[in-house]
Length: 229
Ligand SMILES: [Fe+2]
Image 1 (tube, rainbow, N blue to C red):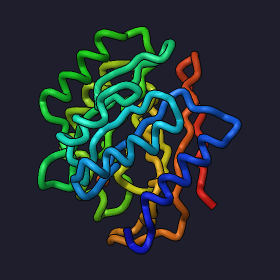
Image 2: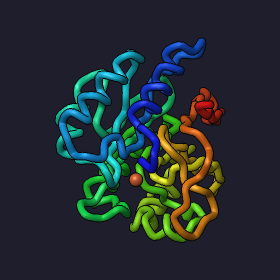
Image 3: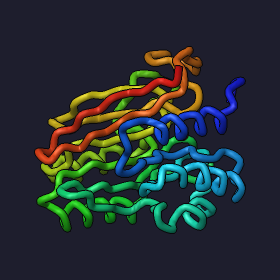
Image 4: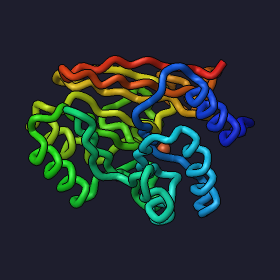
């Protein structure tokens, strides 16, 4: 992508996590994992990820093929969408991908999955993952490609106090905001980044990156960005 070999930068990040002192309990892969809609692309992602030997929660983005992804990335340690419990936290991963649209949408079945999971685990602090941003990021061109029915999603979130954070990819930049007591967090790409606050498409000079999320027992979240230097 734009002169960056995204498979190489992705593998470099996996290597860095694998070699680091701190081990993750799980990985949230927030979409746009493969762009060419091939089985081989997802098999390469799967094979590279297996090095970490932890659960990998996968959701599709606008560039993915949800059908192929669900076939290849839905056998442990991989999970395609849906929810998972880690101690007193519930992770809910939603599919916002829409065919032929770079913007996203939570179809009725995804809104139902969200609501059902929240009702099933009211005592669990909850983190929701999706590919598209449910609030404006501040760049006009990206905000035209966000979650198109974010109002429906936010209305459900507003009714469930256990939701502590929403995390997404798509925007190739870091952000961390508060909305009614819920952390709204975007994560940089493992490839190239987009320039924040730019109304038109502009690449950033920041390197590939990823984000640690430390989900604490009291419902708070510590988070840290790592840039590949
Ligand atoms: Fe995307």
